[in-house]
Image 1: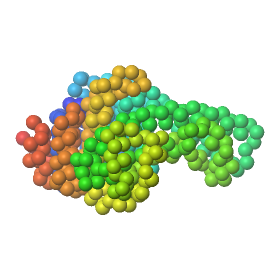
Image 2: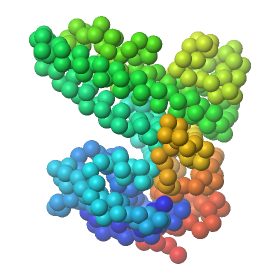
Image 3: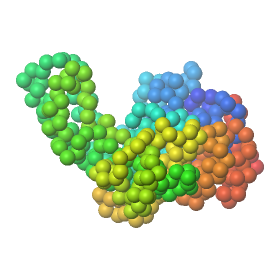
Image 4: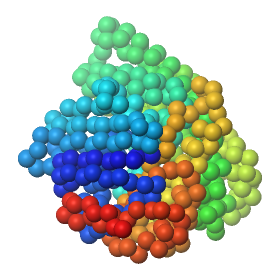
Length: 403
C-alpha cells in the first residue's frame, strides 16, 4: 500500500506530496488534476500513461522530466523518472533497476476509467491485456516468455516488411525464429489458459451481482490466436507466402482474444452448469451449444458498462486468493503486495446500484483505492464502507486534504 506519494511536473501537478490511506477520494472540477494523480500512480506501476504514450504530452510544459515516487507500507520505495525523449530511470529502494516489470510487481495497479468502457467494441489488444495483467501477477514464468516472444515477433515482422522474396539465408533465419516463437507460444498459451480457467467462477459471481438477469446467458471465452493442436512454427511455414505479401505475422499469441458471448434461453441450462464447475476453457468451450451472438451486440450501453465492470471486479479476488492458496512456481503468484485500484469518474459511467456493488466489493478486499469524482455525492457511501477514508479537494493542480 502507498503510504506517501510524491509527484512533480506531471501535467498541472507541479509538486504533490500526499499521505494516502486505504481509501482516498479526490473531488474537483474537470481539468483540476484529479485524473492526473491517477495517471501518476499508473505511470509508476506500468511505466506508461493510460492517457498518452508520449512522455512529452504529460510532462509539464517547459520541464525536462516528471518524477513519481512512492513509499510503501513496509518501507520499500519505488520511483520513476520520465524524460521528454522517453528516457526512463527506475528505482527500487534507491537502487536503479532496468526492468519496469520489477516495479509492476511491487505495485500491482488496476484501472477502471471511462476509456475502458468501450473495450467490448475495440480491438483485441485491450481485452488481451485484461487477461495478461492477471497472468503476469499469477504465473511467475509468464513475463520472460512474453518478452522473448515479442522480441522474435518484432524481428520477424521487420523482415516480412522489408522484402517479398526471401533469400536462402533469410529463410533459414526465419525458420529459426519461428521455432523460437513456437516454443514461447506454447508456454504463453499454457499460462493464459490456466489463469483463464481460474478466472471463470469469479467472473460468474461478478455477473450475478451486477447483471443478475443475464447471468446464465453470458459466457467468457478465450481464443489462443492460433490452432494450439498444431505447433505454431508449422502453421507459420504454411502461411509464409501470405505473410510476405501482407508484411506481418497474422497468427500467434499476439492475436489472442477474450470474448463475452450471449447465449439464447435454450442454451442457458448447460451454460449455467459449465459456470458452476468452472470448466469453461479454450478446449471445453467447443463442447457447449453454439454461441449465438457477441454480448456487445445485444446489451445496452449501460449493461455493457456493468459487464466491463464485472470483468474488472472479478480480477481482484482471484488475484488475492491465488496469493493465499498457491505456493509452487507454476501455480503460485508473484503478487506479494497490496493491489492499488484506480477509479476515475465512476459516477459518470455507472448508476448508483452498480457503484454501491463495486465499492462494497472493494471495501471487503485488502486493496488500496484511489477514486475521483466531480462532486462529493459519493462521500456518504464511502464513509459507510470504509472506517477512515481520506477526502481531498483538487483545484488547479493543488491537492488539499479535507479534515
